[in-house]
Length: 68
Image (cartoon, rainbow, N blue to C red; front, side, top):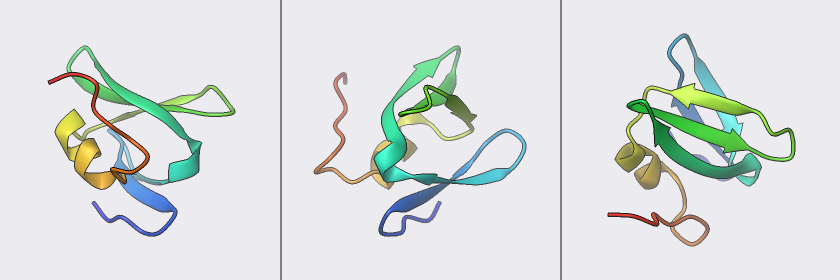
């Protein structure tokens, strides 16, 4: 997916959605699905990207992978 300056486009299981990078708290996998947890709303989005794909979409100076 595309990465712009302040947003990324992700594919949910129904539609594409634009998410502000500043709103992303963390990403994790749960039941073979990647979940993006958002702040300050506390909401989350289930996306069809793998955790590796999310790692490539997010800026490395602000996000890191804490396992593997």
